[in-house]
Image 1 (cartoon, rainbow, N blue to C red):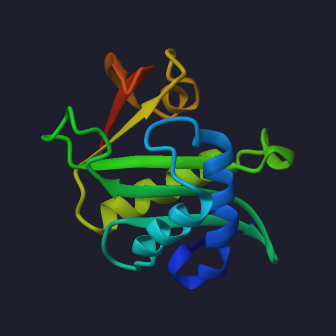
Image 2 (cartoon, helix red, strand yellow):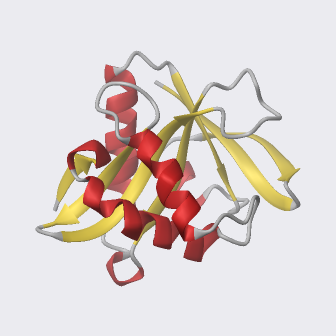
Length: 153
C-alpha cells in the first residue's frame, strides 16, 4: 500500500465521489455524484488546503481522507478539519484508516497546522479515540448526532 495525494492521481475523483455519495449522500445537501466530482477538484493541491490523501495498492484505490477548512459552520473558530475518511468495504479492518489519519496529521504538521478537528457519528469516538483525539462536544448537526473531537499537533 502507498499513500499519495489526490493531486497526483486525479483519476480517482469519480471513485471517491461515488464512495462519498453512497456513504453520506443522504446527509446534508444531497449532492449528486457528478456535483461531488466537481467539488472534489478543489482538493487537487499539494501544499495547501483542501487536500485529499489516497491509499492505493497498485492501481486499486483502497481509501481516502481529507484535510480541509471549516467543516462545521457552528465552530467558526475551529479552522482545520479531518473529513471524508473512507476505506472500501473489502479493505476495512486492515489498518488503512489508521494510516490515512496518520498521513493527514503528518501533512497538517508540514503545513504548520496546530490542531485538527473532526466529527464522527460514533459517540465513543471509535478509531479516533484510539488514535489520541479528544472529545470536545456531542451535538446535533444537520439533524444528526455527532461527536466533535480535536487533536493538538
